[in-house]
Length: 87
Image (cartoon, rainbow, N blue to C red):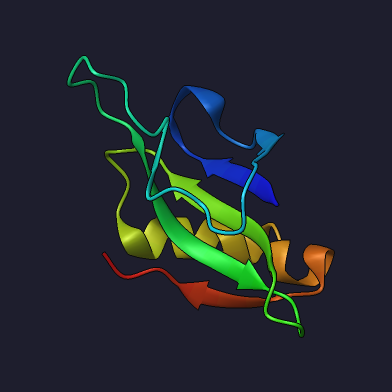
């Protein structure tokens, strides 16, 4: 699965993630109380597998992350259906 980042210092960056489900925050546990990127959207393929996860910077509004993910056409690129992640 691919992690895609919106906003902050790693805006428009990508990386591979291990596992079947993406973590709710990235990095998962900093231990230092630092703000972390939060999961906003998950793209699932027809077989139900997670193809990508969109993480937004801590200070970004949900609507803004969704708008940018749509602009960048992540769903089309990964041939997946986007689903809003609810916390």
